[in-house]
Amino acid sequence: MRITSLMLSLCAAALLVTGCAKNQMPARKAVDQIEDSLKAVRADAEKYAPEGLKSVDSELNRFKDDLEAKNYDDVVAGAPQLQKAVDSLQDAVALGKKHAAEAMEVAKTEWSSLSEEVPKMVETIDKRVSEIDKKKFFKGIKKEDFEAAKGQLETMKTTWAEASDAHKAGKTVAAADKARSAKSMGDELYEKLDIKKT
Image 1 (tube, one colour):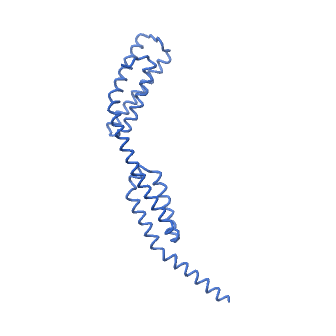
Image 2 (image 1 turned 180 degrees about the vertical axis):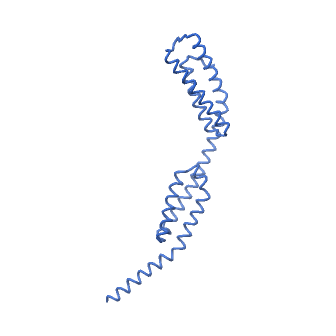
Image 3 (image 1 turned 135 degrees about the vertical axis):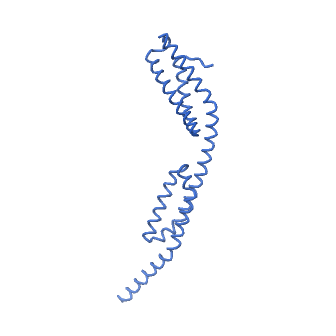
């Protein structure tokens, strides 16, 4: 009886090993296919969907660990879901590219107007500051507020210089963001220094 039980146990173990081994090739093939799919989208995913890529990479590494541990059944069972995650990542990349292209078009339009408007604002504010500084006449503005406004003007100039550098470097979206920030500072200074917009 004991020998029969032992034989049954050995047969069951042999079947289990055979079943697992049978799934070895499908498991490796599934991981290879997923890696190939991911390779095709990796560079764009790093730029447009980094968090999604991180999640897929983490899951793929877990699958590789399962291969090493010979958990082939787990890999075969989970592969379709991971492939779906890679497909979703490709969709996220396509959407990211679309949004980036739209943002670029908006930035180009914004830059076109801001690149004319902001330098004129800087020039007007500069003149107003010089005028008040020479006359020492602070009507409608406290002296400490005027000093703060001068500091803000310098920040505005620096921000505009950074915007110009970004545009020269071909970073149109960043340039428009900086230019928008400079204009916002200029609007505040127009109000603080009682400059009428023409």
